Length: 200
Length: 200
DNA sequence: TATCTAAATGACACAATGTCATATACATAA
DNA sequence: TTATGTATATGACATTGTGTCATTTAGATA
Image 1 (cartoon, protein in one colour):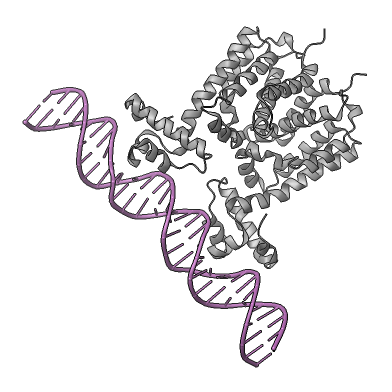
Image 2: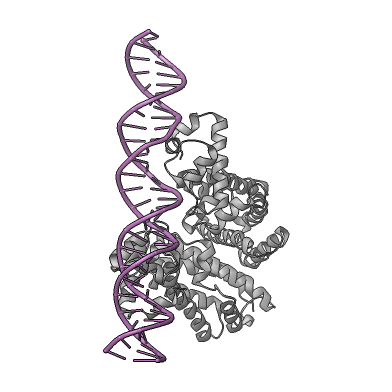
């Protein structure tokens, strides 16, 4: 998403810009963040910024994308490890994600992201592209679920995704530990699993 | 939320300001909407706007609140009508809401609202206050559910709410009819209900 | 060394925000 | 009626931020 130019400048300068941006997006949510602050902190002229990025949103999503790719990758890894158990995979994904966003270096940054995350944007975090959805569908073993077609699987993924995101956001409002948050997520998933898991 | 002053001015002027705001919030999402446009359209001086509302957000939420109160009220009505069936109540709520937001007069306005709705804000639409959550809990008949305590009910409401919001937002992305959207919501809810409903 | 192209730079025009000193309207009391 | 006080109205203004563009600089190639 950033312009070619940005990829070509020295790594050191790239880092300076990205760190300044993360600092600014930690200070304020996207709509309150300012390019003025980023360039001041990164010590680059205004014109340069626009040489690298189209606008504020461009650099915001560029940084975000790195993290969301990482999260999506974790889901696919989990599906492989669990031999296609989508429920366990989502639970592991939740553990992974909640630990990631509580990393002291990024905690404030992610808090701003999540509390101001558009629904329109939330797919960035899990299955924003058709390719990803297909990967998830193909890696999932539907025999572990009380459904008879891959088509129905889409609904289940939809549900899991909704609850996943909902809980991540809630975790910022609940004033409780990471462990307790995971516990709640698992409880909610279990309530649903009683309907999803095939009864033997 | 608006300052006292706004309540005191002539109804006609109030309408002019509110209609101008709705027009502006239909034109652009909150972050791109401008007070400049609202006052131009409402034909009031800049200073007056700040006499009535703290800022752009203030009038945005003021208008939104009217609608969210209406939606919350519908949920409570449904609970009374269904004698505490929370699942049917949410399905009826979904039908009610999706019809409401497709009303031609407000369609574009709501589209902007939903596609840019923060997770932080989404509770505005359903159970933003503890009082409301309590009302819902008290009106719900937990004997219809596979749970043994009111405490667990909170998780179920959480889940229903997450899927409710997720589907409303998705309805703008799916290019299908209202009826088809309702169908999908019901399908997802049914998948869950198999785990929620008490097995006889 | 000359020439060409990509990147860097910061001044600038424009747009929007929130505030504030001043003006106006309105109510109440003398 | 007039005076006085209070609430509201008004728009000019300082401030902040945005995106652009003409110009400069750097680096590659001939």
